[in-house]
Length: 263
Length: 215
Image (cartoon, rainbow over all chains, first blue to last red; front, side):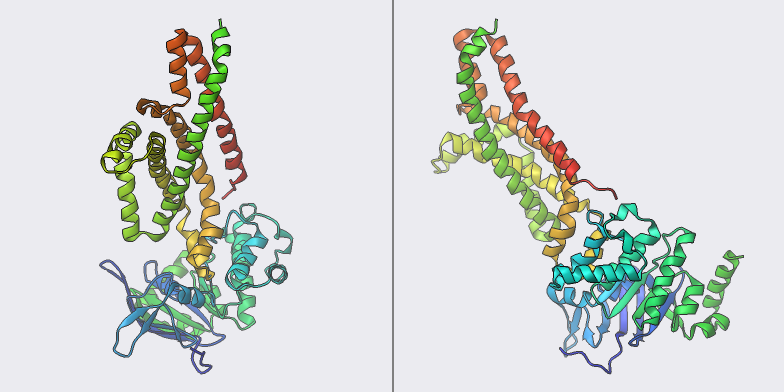
């Protein structure tokens, strides 16, 4: 299926997901435009990470539809309403267009930084080794870690590991980048270096979905802010407006708790 | 005092060769079988994993000596005219395989889920993920228990003498019956088994170091 330029980069329609009896996503629908930065905030257990993980099929939605550039992700809904799971090859192909950065970095500990970055382009997209290597060097330059190219992940700080993880995801030349609480596991003084890289990416026009607890960052970098609670979108819109004039009591309470914790 | 051992050493060496051959084929093929089954069980799951688990439970629950008797006496009854060596090697392969299956399965499952998620998120398919991410990390967890098992199974080759298959232990008993020098002969046998197993320990230690990495 060819991609449709008029389609949003991500389209989520009526996505439901439950873990056993626990309903995690309760019919979520939203779009993310090309080049847009969507910041998702919400309390723990609100479903924000699950929603993000659905966007590259690490979690499988029970109902509804997720389209990446108009192409259905994971399941294809037939005309008669039946859902058919896509083949493993097709799911892998879709995922290769969607970069993801995790809270716990998840670098490959048995490979050095260079190999961490070149592994997927070479093995998944058949990129020439020399070319993948050049790209790895350029990406490390970009995230400010050119000198660490031959180090093993265990030798790097959390912030450095996370920047390598971003470079690793970018090496696949994804159309979308997903960030799952990527600064939550970092020491406070290392958060800035990771956010700086993300800000640079946003300015370059990368489509990004960011699940975060960094309210200031969500405000500054997000084109749009979405507040999720109990698997529903409670409020969304321009970050400045959402933060300064929250309408729902739940968001008010959430923001209040946050500002209280910052003194 | 050890003249009797030295005089009979050539004969014991012939037995040693037979033991090595049994170990190489029985334990080697069994390890290969178990590695494949264990990885498949961990990666595929479902009915395939259940089938493999059944094999493991059945084989593991019965002593290898009993399996050797079964293979030796039962197969001909079932119309399979296999030789005694084939029967005991079959038992060795299946028995080794069952234990190695669990070792391999455990090693693969011990690779953190985060690692497979990272690989999936990069668009890797299962086989690529297995080759580049899972197996390299599983190896260091696989080697120590595998060595343990290999040494155990090499020593278990001495059981084959009970159904009349000739190897080192059998040869030693023959010599002892002839010379009545049980102490000297079995001291020699002890040393020979040790010399077979010890290099394996060294090799495993080397491999373990070679494939270890810091998290």
